[in-house]
Length: 409
Image (cartoon, rainbow, N blue to C red):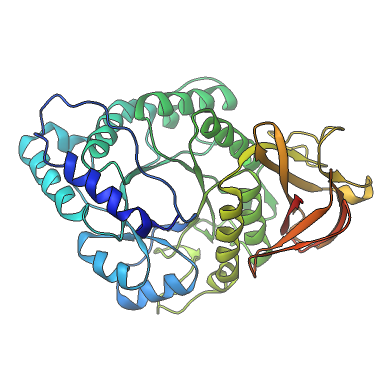
């Protein structure tokens, strides 16, 4: 659903709750925000201008950083704004004067159809969750149709950063549990960057799996912030096929949003925009991928993410393909080479109706013959059209890091 279609209902809710006294005892307001069009955004970018907004829209980005004064500009370019403001912090609630200023800000911006979310913070420790939970609840009472956005640490954060203890899975799992219980977010967002010079780190799929399971347990959408730059000598700048791999693996795990680190920032190589404002090679690489992400995620939004399996990858978090799945590679050879295939299964209840098949080799294309429970149809993400077949078997030609969505007819 496009955000404009929900504007009237959101405005009514906004007008109802924003006039409540700041310190009055207020009932819990249920979250009215919905993802709508699947999210394509970024972390860190240039100040907003007409040229920046146009470049972002042409690149397939649909949620962008903004200040209050940028909202009209975003509306002209069909963009949704994530509002950044110094008042959007838990400490604001401790001051009657600042709380009044926050209320005034919300009263002004919640009427604007280009406003999509409020940016709160990045990578908080669990110790910050109580204050963040109070702020999220406060914003939800006054503008329930907008999301309060918080981004979480990756699995490789240490215990001190997470504010929890134990090994990686234990500490990170507890971090997620506390976040969901205390903050009660509308969306789960996290970042994970694995492309080093000469190798990849080994927790990318573990992080995806843990976030997927946590989000599913609460019926929440999630967003993955992926690597689109280098910020240190040991970190490599991804190339086009690696970016395709990031987009399609994110989709296969059921995400409804993707974000790139970074759009542009000082002392970062890569990103989307050069210092002179011209687009980079990475921008050109994601320009066709972003509409594909939106197209496939839109197809999957009415469904549930039921399972995710790997045919060959044995990194932490990678679950092996069972023998009795509804869609599967026809032969062992079709399961791919060393990295193999990733299969994300979607449907309703316990019935699988769709599978997203992803080639995990981002250096070479492959062909996989997939067998399903009935005649199959293939989705062309570039055109947004399904093409049916007369067979329960389909031969998929997968580009490096790419995927194809398949369904039974």
